[in-house]
Amino acid sequence: MVRRRCAVYARVSTDERLDQSFNSIDAQREAGQAFILAQRSEGWIPVADDYDDGGFSGGNMERPALKRLLTDIEAGKVDVVVVYKIDRLSRSLADFARMVETFDQYRVSFSAVTQQINSATSMGRLMLNVLLSFAQFEREVTGERIRDKFAASKAKGMWMGGPLPLGYDVSNRQLVINEAEAKTVRHIWTRFAELRSTSALCRELGRDGITTKAWTNTKGVFRPGRPITKQNLYKALRNPVYIGKIRHKGKIHQGLHEAIIDQDLWDQVQSILAVESRERRAATLTRNSPPALLRGLLFAPNGDRMIPTSTRKSRAGSGKQYCYYIANSDKKFGHGTNPVGTLPAKAIESLVVEQVLGALQSPETIQSVWDEVRRRDVGIDEPAVVMAMCNLAVVWNELFPAEQTRLVRLLIERVQIREDGLDIEWHAMGWSGLAGELAPNTIGAELQAFEEKAT
Image (cartoon, rainbow, N blue to C red; front, top):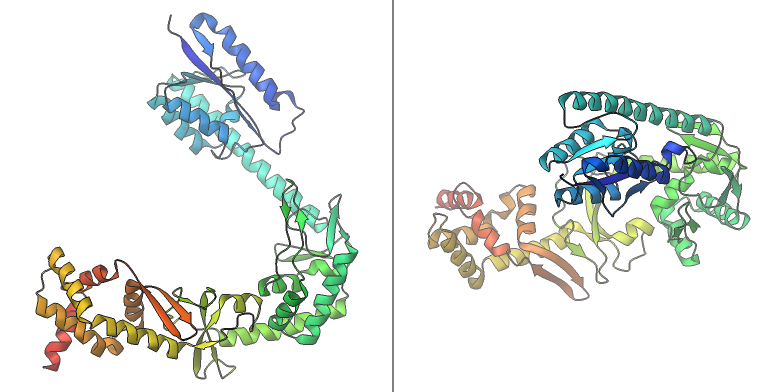
């Protein structure tokens, strides 16, 4: 008699009642073990390990015990998989089909305690597919029911979870004012109405040590307060929860909680934000704007990344465009956070390009690139390489901005601002990459054509 090693897989999801017998992990495991014992005459024996997924949905395969079971199957440790019901294994027809392929590949069968199914026969497979189709339908209907219940609860003004807003605690699905934090909230809203600037307010809150809410989530994980960024401010100042309302999918419902600020202050702040929004849109770069040459490459003396930005003199967006680089901390917490200030893009990009073109024309660089071209055997001779690199300085301004940016990124890894100038860190493989650019039908061919036209 051939011995068949049997593994019992049990699962319950978070939205199922754990007091129901068929949903209890222990009950499923005991029923599976008893089923294996009843098949002892067929050579069935239980494996020592348990495969239990408590609190995991059957709609996907992101389950630790299921992954461990599939790993053991691939390792040849399991011959039969036993479940209480088919939907304990999966509620997704696509996922189940993948599991069946794995079972077939490793000659593993499975059985359900409460359903007479034999996965080794074509009729058994048909029954499995039918049952799983209904299981998937049930899961989708359950999801719709949960979403409808969530929306109905929101419409009644109930708090349905998520990060708690500063100024409130939660009790019995209802927000309760935290008086100490509510004082801070009123201060933030009042100061914004006075300053009319998120940047100025952000710097002020940073100096005063005011942070976002520190709280503990439902899983017991503590979330410490963090410095308030401009994004935090925009989100808070547009949150109707502070006037006693709940937002859900674009609709505003009257909440069950008390308001922290009054309607007049809310209206005043929204008017200021609307003006700010119009000004930001007028200053935003258009889709056809040239790419920032040093995006992601430029760093302030303290290591803060420099972010490209721009503005226009005309509010209608048709005036002259001025491009700058500002520190990432300035963008998050307001201008003046980083002492490096605002740097004109044209001036600093010109300095970098000057160093790049100087390096391209140095004898050491030309020799290094020629050695790499010769090693690759890309089909050009040494004079052509020397001529192409020398001509790059002349033809640089004729290249498209996107092409200039691509070449700079090919050669440079980091541009570090110092008190006395700039330090450029070259890519270790940048010169080798440039060698490939000098092959026929690339930028090298364009430079050669330029030389021929000039002569």
